[in-house]
Length: 281
Image (cartoon, rainbow, N blue to C red; front, side, top):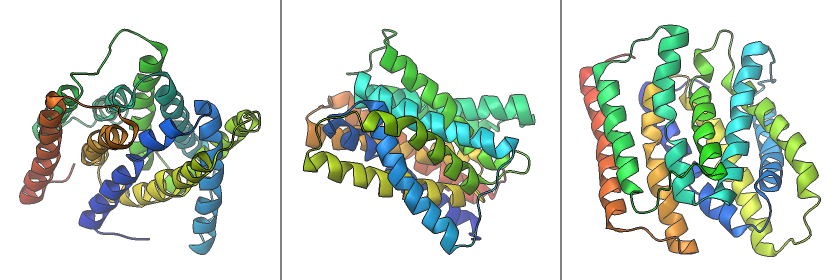
């Protein structure tokens, strides 16, 4: 499926909005993070497999595609487990170090020097995220915070999937869900409580927050540069804690509202300037 640069950016943005429901859905499910991850990715695997079959896109596999799959698997697992060990705000703000790692990895492995605009945008957006969570961010070195930070590293790899040699982002997503399902389902079958709310939340996670979001992201990354994609996804750390605050009563303070404005202005401003410059990164 071929898309324009503008459509690709839109797909990345929609994917980030879908990702943002993860914090709330995971919070309301009374299972371990790894069990939740196994269940949601098993559902996602069916949806993604159906999409690949419908588009006649058989999953490929080579070492680069497998590396992308490991990044998808790591992001899935670490995010789900961290959400159970720390607050949704802590998890998403630490995962959103991803744009920084995208720039670092691009420089180290592809020798792509970041543009000044990229660096400024990263500073503004990341600063806004920190400001957004100044009331709740706990950098005490807990296990949940550490895993959330690691998820930022693996999430950066997801944005770089299309930059790898002989890559295929959709195949990486497919195999990443296979890894997630195989490792998580044994923990899911050990759970003893299966309330309707948990089942519904798991289906929402699998179909929308994982499958549809990853499909849109994989397509969007074909025309959206990694740094831009990771910055466009800045809407996720704003929406995620807002949903958790509204429906799960993890409330935000006044600084959070200021931080939200900074993130949104940073992301929108970056893309407006990018469009005016007509630059390619």
